[in-house]
Image 1 (cartoon, one colour):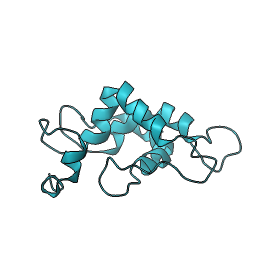
Image 2: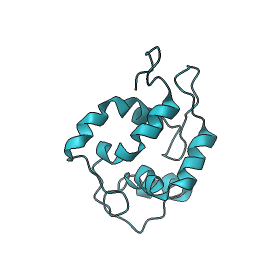
Image 3: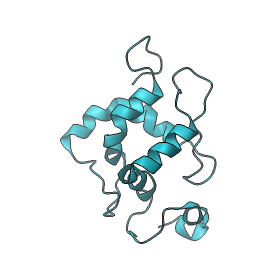
Length: 122
């Protein structure tokens, strides 16, 4: 995934599709709903995915406020596309939002949880 490439994987949408399964490589959560896989050998092969993970963590405030729009050709994946992906893939939803919490699998993964400052340190 290279936003400067002429051809190849120079599309956020294509990169996200290929990288999504490796999201567990970038965090250290120990929860059962979003377990880390960062110690697996194959994680190193997903290093080119970091442009995707960086953009998915480009927020205005807490985690649910993702800013995917960017005025560059590479960023061809909008917030509506991402919201649909979260609806369609509950495992990725749990990885994406659940990895922010290290131990509490019972905490709901919704806007109220992320907007509550009492949860910011857990």
